Image 1 (spheres, each protein chain N blue to C red):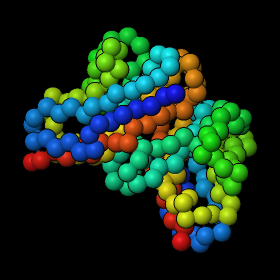
Image 2 (image 1 turned 180 degrees about the vertical axis):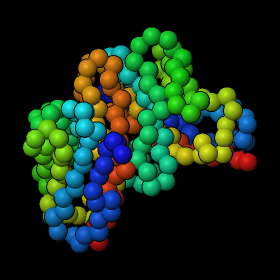
Image 3 (image 1 turned 120 degrees about the vertical axis):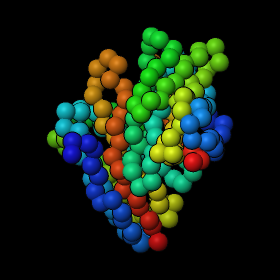
Image 4 (image 1 turned 90 degrees about the vertical axis):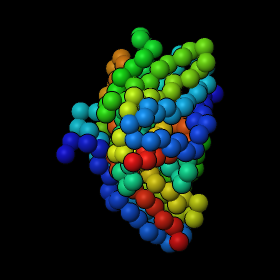
Length: 114
Length: 115
């Protein structure tokens, strides 16, 4: 069975500070991992993915994420937060050997305080 | 705009009525997905097409739900005899097949309210 956990419903960070949004996962085979961002009244926007290769992946808008196999984690990071980064962030996983659909976490609301 | 589009964006219906939603994927994408998202939750998978073939269906897709993709381009999702529990955001996504083309691109969603 596949599952994703986002342990924090809400993350607050001051503008200019580094931010981290946490994600842990569970799959049977090798994981394919994704981060999406959702702004109000808009669909999910793809930020970045880990399929294979370097554990640190870089994505859109200065975001990056680190894949840690031993801790089954894929935390989203950004060195310097912007107020415009305030949104709902979803982590998703797909099993490399299983179905094509994505399993999503429950989301983390990021608020960047000016 | 070459992204995924969905129509209508909002639908209010009375319990027991049928509703149909449309999704137009990114033109070169051969895979199309439907998800449902309720408040405070992440999207939940409903069904998946590769070209015109419906290859996977979730247990969430009760017999009141049906999806089609007749020519491998746009797709429709129909809900018959709607119930209040069907109120949710219905999201469509598309992707390419092929190695490493696993990210899905989502439309803006159709928000269904059943009264």
